[in-house]
Length: 168
Image (cartoon, rainbow, N blue to C red; front, side):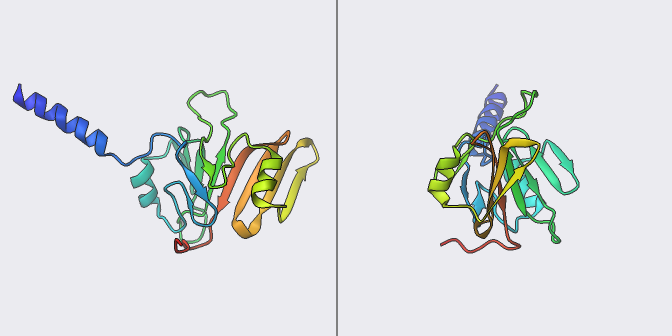
């Protein structure tokens, strides 16, 4: 009996001490610095230690369906290069929409006007001829892109440079 109680207490304590996030809601994005707990230069092993194993792996891309984002390790040294998140527009209930936001409060569902108010005019915009309500706002100096559909953010991408900048 004492052994069983000890094992239960140990399991509860291990769960309480886990640092793995359970939701993307607390992920704060600082362009050029971090995407929640992720930052430029992190290895695949480091990402897995923080987030656990991905739901899917494909050609240097890891998908975390429960968080609503995927990580691209596509640069030459196979470290975090781009993190892309979406609103979870899928019929699969296991795929969650990203619930985090930038430090300026921009997230999935923010309006085009809110993005412009937070970041100013984009360095470039991209329209798709066969999808007139869809556009991408590129903030290249920040390494930040916003995909909008019907004037609302449906996706975000943080493009990191090869090494993490020092936090200031």
